[in-house]
Image 1 (cartoon, rainbow, N blue to C red):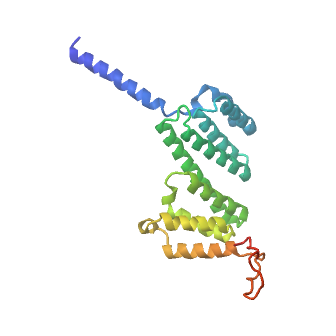
Image 2 (cartoon, rainbow, N blue to C red):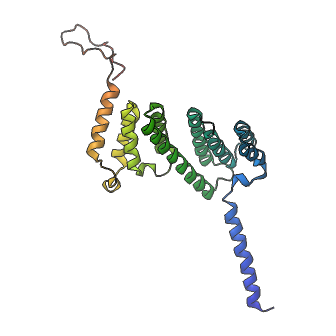
Image 3 (cartoon, one colour):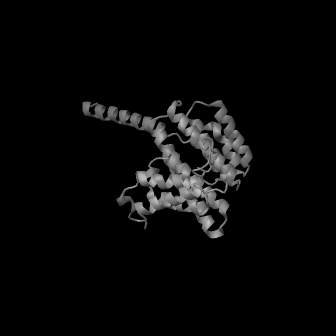
Length: 248
């Protein structure tokens, strides 16, 4: 056999080995044998059983990155139960577990696996936030508006590059203000003032002046309360222990 042919064959094996190694870092958790029962339960509409099956897998592999992927599956299955409160709980649980898996880090938490899950969480949370916002605009049910605001806050707290999405933050701040979630509105308006640049606002008819005004208005409404006593008069004998209003 000619030497160059041998070299080509060896090179092919090396490249194939590298490709296999790279592919193995991108684990598709649904293809793992241990998830078969959970997949079958989900396919048959037995969502509670599927969730329990994934819970057992998490308990069996608590410090492996696959546990994050199992929890992600639980989050998506929970959506089929049409219980927004429960879905919110699972979103929080998924994000918290993901942060823990990155920080420790868990076994199998390769940069590729982390980035893949980060992208998947980004996409999922953004979609759900937009969905609940649209439902609120159609139904005018404040419950859905509240979920949209909560999801927006989750996105800014946990997800990558969310601080750059100024249009999303303006929508979130305005919605939070409209449903009297003034604490969130204040935080989001401040985030806009800290993070957004002019070129990031091209598609949104807002400005730093709007954000500053929104922050002031939201802060004012946040502080407003009937529990605030009148200011003490100058001629009072002793004002040293005059109670500070909780709303301040």
